[in-house]
Amino acid sequence: MASIVTGDGSRTLFCESVGEHYHSTKDGAFSEALYKHVLPAWKYRIAKRQKVTVLDICFGLGYNTFVLLWYLARKKYAGHLKIISPEHDRRLLASLADFKYPKEFNDLSPIIREVAENNRYERPGLLIEVFGVDARSWLAGLEGPFDIVFHDPFSPAHNRKLWTREYFAELKRVGADDLFLTTYSTATAVRMGLFENGFHLYENHHRKVLVRSSTLASLTRLPLAEIDMRLKRQRNPAATSLRDDR
Image (cartoon, rainbow, N blue to C red; front, side):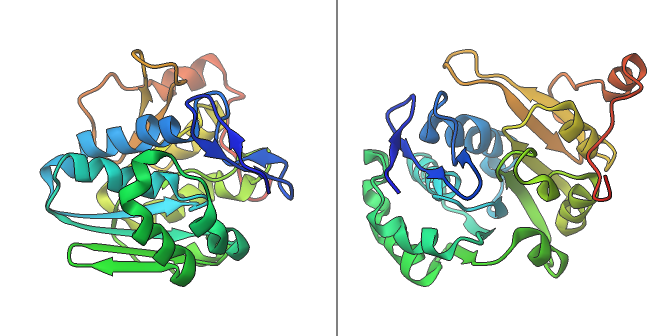
């Protein structure tokens, strides 16, 4: 597959089998990972913790994981980080060593190569494991707890089973009591699925950059203006979450 230059100059791919790009070509692959996942995870969870476990769904080209490593290196983070991720496309994983990543990842080349070849990288204070499996089936047997979920699968239109209320219940099951989740989706049905599982929801704005807003979800309250999902439901009684059976 030929790589595609996105809005911020970083590259992504188009998945022919799904009919969707791995990243927003407008927002940019690097920027999307940084602003929609990594920065809020740092601010609301990682910065004050010495041990963090992240569930990265789905791994894809690895931008969420690799941007997180790049950012933590800039912050001189000295804690223990564990990243676990499913990715059913094993051919894609094997190809990552040859993918043209942005220059910010130059120092990560040994990690990228190791993950591509062995689906794993480990050193003191860092463990990355990528499993070549179907995410939904794999999740049923997974044990936590995870502190953070980077929720980044293909859209509900193309991968519905990773956006339902029942699926979010599984994420809650493997999450810590204060599980923090980031996702690019702002769809009401997605937010309803999270809300119905006890998550507090917040708009993740990016006013200083040309990146569209996204969603933050937390099982504990954040110091932000919360989205009033009860009011949304009152105003639109037809608003509902996606379900496994419909």
